[in-house]
Image (cartoon, rainbow, N blue to C red):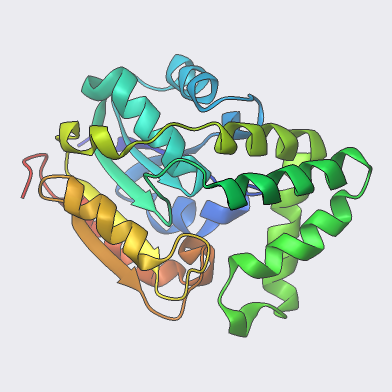
Length: 238
């Protein structure tokens, strides 16, 4: 039986390394495709359009953080092309004023040639507090951040802070949906995942223990177990 394509959208300062555990661990049941369009455009709509232009005619879709914002837009534009949806550590809300202010500060640092400072400040905040000094993990995350680069980061921040409110369209999502969140995610904490899951008919919520904002790289085995179950299920909403 042909394996279904799985389109993986990373988050801010993230690239292929974020999904390394999934591209290797799930390759027996799916065809993983990691997009980098999330770092190439300045609006969520433009990212979604670019992804759809290059994507297979039908695919499973997973997005983490910023990738989740893009996934919502893809569903709004091409619901019939998406067979199933996974939303990891993301939010359906628009940017809050304090978030936008922080993004503008980070954009200023990147524009001033201080992208290294951006990475030093943000990357440890993405993971469980116990991993904030994990040199090996931070090196993997830094490799992703450097792949995105300062220009890509600036574009990502612009897209994130101008995103729309996705809550009104949650009820229109009619594909099998998995919502995943790290128990210790401080950036998009569990209540935001609970709100998303409550708004989508039949959605399954999985909380990954001992994980911050990036369970796909912090807890790949637990993340893969949830994704494997989601990928193996039928397309009928449970």
